[in-house]
Image (cartoon, rainbow, N blue to C red; front, side, top):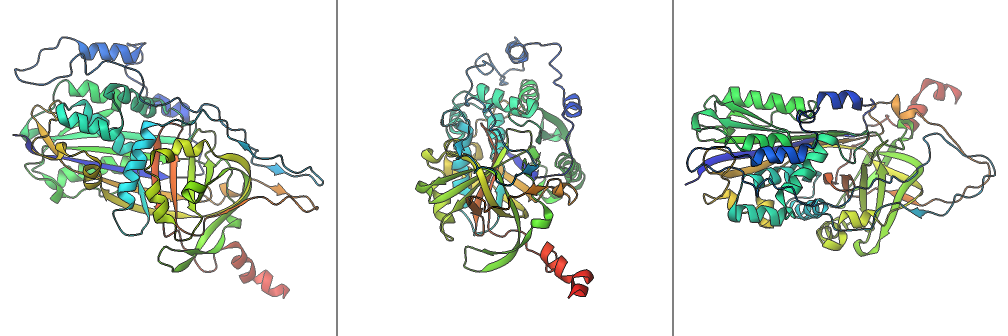
Length: 501
């Protein structure tokens, strides 16, 4: 019979628009692939190492030749052609000819992407399962964890993970996650840290010898024994690692009450993202603006403003508009899906799980044009038990004593629960100084009217590359505007203003 207790805890943190630049050369040195030098063709050589004839104790499961075969990729090609956008300093000369007509973004043909598909399915289950509130989660974090578990599973447990996770070849999917974790594929200068660690109870056994090279090579997973009987010490140790990996954004993930002598292991995944807008918002343009909530009430929120080159699309089938905000020097962008109707969020969320509304297909309809943009600042934390949504999607056996997770530890185990805690912060640019680094000059003649995108009611957002969704969620309650803090209030309340009157 399987042991109780493998508790998988996932977490995520995203801080957007930080004002500091990121030194990628330094980051790559810190996270250099240890197999790069000894194994020039690292995927195949590491696969060969895993296929080697190792001797294991009688009855112990290990990764055989089929497990480590590298097959064709599960995902679609990366979007390597980034749309050409205007510079940050947009000088508009008097009498300039009208802007050219919008053109479609340069993208590969729309195809169904298995990572996008999983993200949409999971989002629909989470979004419809609770109250109308702010929500953010990291589908790539859950997806990577499922792929890691699939590599240590067999039988019905494996089949359920593959079907729900939309990957037919678990090793090809593992290579896709390795590309994202190690080589930041599609990220450019956006910062992404994705870390995994396995904490196992040294009193109840050890790690399967074949799991260590698999988890380390494809997922950069660390492995550490702990004493689950020392609940407080172990919880403090795990929380300290979590805090460090998420730059202090996620704290106190677990408590000593979450651990007991029957806890076989904890598998912890942390993801942290930070990026700068390609077209920054100026803090002086952030004003108080009324935002209507789903329940009909309204609040004055901090509404950011900009006018510049953005991706925009109208999706009649969703009864929604889509805005794409690119991150600087990166293939990563944020999509905001805004219902046309102020009470249309529930309908939009229910449609996003349909195959024809795969995010990759939505992205292919975006056109680059000059847009007047108003979006609210938002910052919040969200915790979600992923166990029920995954069960509803069809991942069931791994949560039962019949679970066939046989290659992770030196005995069969089952999953007790999957928990994710996420944090997101969206603002002008991170600091006031960095938010006012551009100037805009307008002509004296009447300019051509530009399309407007005003997110003054609840909306869905997604942070994604061309092949993966890093974060997804909804905004019901943006950041409130503190009285007297917007630029207009500061001007009218200043001594100089009152003196002039």
